[in-house]
Length: 145
Image (spheres, rainbow, N blue to C red):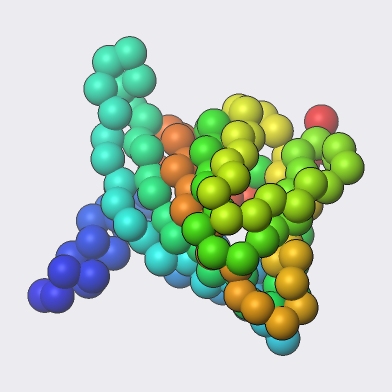
């Protein structure tokens, strides 16, 4: 088994039935001309006092003009712009444009209301760490607060 397949299998076992690929497929369905793709970088079970939770790191690539629907993560989410620029907002606040080297934070329970590539011609890449209860999906459609 190749390293990537091994990592994918481990991530699937830790996060339950919804895999990172399913999240990428859902994003692609919302932006078919320019899909968002997720690549797992690692998942690590946390210890006390966070036992039963997992920290999952992903690389998310936004194609030119890609836009994701409003969604939520199962716990706090930390992000960092690696390449390009993204439009980002939580809880319906005005969107901010974040560029390479900038980071963002989404508190537990927040709605990721704006998630888009700021460029129509260049891809954007972010690295994210999502903390959530082991076995919960990493992302779900937003629910009203």
